[in-house]
Image (tube, rainbow, N blue to C red; front, top):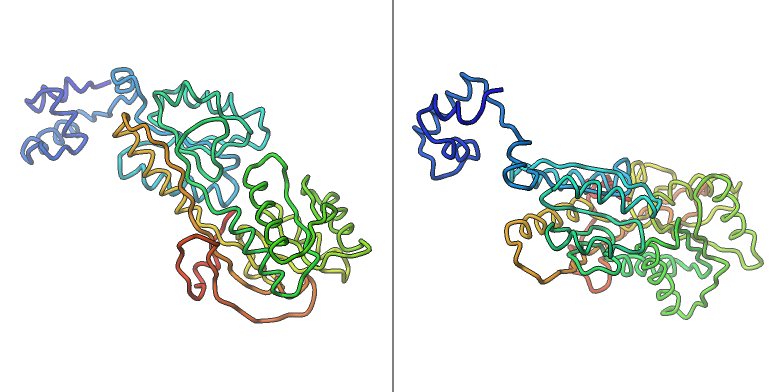
Length: 364
C-alpha cells in the first residue's frame, strides 16, 4: 500500500503538508495542492484511516445509536446527522439498539470502544449512569429522550405540551371519554405524554380514568382487546390518543375491525400514508430532521471545544396537523374540514396553514 510519505516525496513536500492538503487546509497554496493531487492520482494513494486513528487515538467518525433505524422517525434523525457529519468530512457509524433495555449498555459501549469522536444517542433504558466514565472523554448528545441518572446534552421535543394539545383538541371536539394508548410504561417520552394527557383532562375538569389507559403490546390481539374494552365499557370511550406512530400503526387497523364501533383518533407522530387514509389521521407533527441536525451541531461543538462543562437541555416545539380522524370515527363517513396548526404550549413555532410538504412528513 502506498504511504503518505511516498506521496510527499513524489510531490516534493513534507508528509504533514500532504495531510493538510488532503484536509483542504486553507493555508496550503494552490500550486502545492496541485502537486499533491497529481502525486495522489499517479500513485493511486488511499488514506489509511486505521493508521490515522492509531496516531490520533480517536476514530475519524461519530456514532449514532437509536432504537430502530427502520422507524421513519429515527431514520430521519440519522439522515440529518449524516448530512451534518458530511460537512465535517466525518464518517457515521450507526447501530440499532432495539427496545429491550437490557441490550442498551453492551451495544452502546461496543460502539464507544471503537474510540468514536462523539455519540448521538436515543436511550431505551431507565439508567444511563454507566456512561459517566465515557462522558469524561467522549461528547454525547441525547435525542428524543433525556438521559436518566446522568447530566448530559439533550435535544428533545415537547412531549408534555404536544400531548396536552392533542387531548385538548379532542375535548374541543366534544369528546369526554378519551382513551390513552402507549407501548411501554418505561419510555420517558410515553410517560411525559401520559402526563400531558392527564393534565389536559384535569384542566377541562374531566376525571382521569385508569380503565381508559393501555400500556402494552401493539400486536393485533392486544390492540383488539384494548380497544374493545374501551368501546364496550359502561361509559365507552369516544376517542383515542395514541402516544406514538408505532402504536398508531396498531391502533388504526384495530379501530377498523371494531365493526361500526369506531372511535376518533389523534396520533403523536406522523407516519407514511397518514394523510391518505380514510379517514385521514390527525397527528402531533414532530420534526426529526431538526432534532438530528440540532444534535449533530451540538456534538461537533463539543468535539471542537471539549473543555466546556455546561450541559444543555433543548426542547423543540411540536404542532398539530388536523385531518379527519379527530372529529370522525375511524371507519365512519367522511369529512373534509381542515384547521390551522397550533403550536405546543410555551413553545415558539410557526403558526400558519399546514403545507402539503408538512402533511407528508414522517415521524415516530
